[in-house]
Image (cartoon, rainbow over all chains, first blue to last red; front, side, top):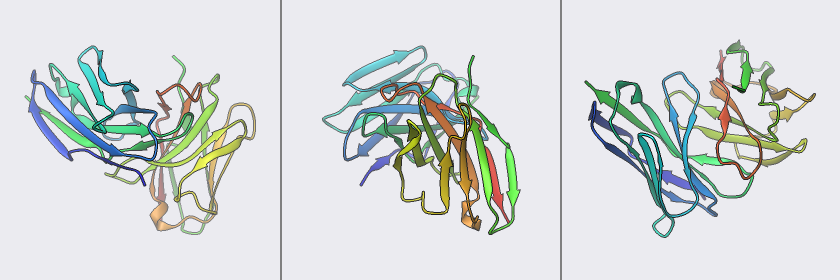
Length: 110
Length: 114
């Protein structure tokens, strides 16, 4: 089977840094992606890791350790608009679907 | 910027009725997906479609579901006999190739089964 785990909720204040963790157990592994979803909206792609290490895209960074089946999304200089749900997703085969984690609801407080 | 579109934005139907949800993927994309999300829960994979055939489907995608690409632009999800538990947001997504890891999601269709 396939399973992903994420914390259900995270709260932080504007300007802070927050890390959202994801652990996974899948039959194969082709990469770990992160998506942001605002209430009532569609998931939007944030980042992707296929190899170990850190990928940086502006205020967002994503890290992967394949040996630990673990990754995280790091959000810096938090803004109110970052309040949303964040999903990690694993693709276990080329060209196939992504399995999404349960999501982490991030609340950014003033 | 190209985007995935979905119609209708909200569909209300009676239990047992058939519904067709429509999607127009980005024009040069080759892989198409349907996902569903029950309110407050995670995004769940239903089916992927490539080269005019289903490439993978989940346990959720049983005999009451079908997908079709009737022409060069539309990608549809049909639910033959809706159940109350089919009430959810249904998202269509597409990618230009199997090696591209960014899926482009449409805005979703909210299906309400009464």
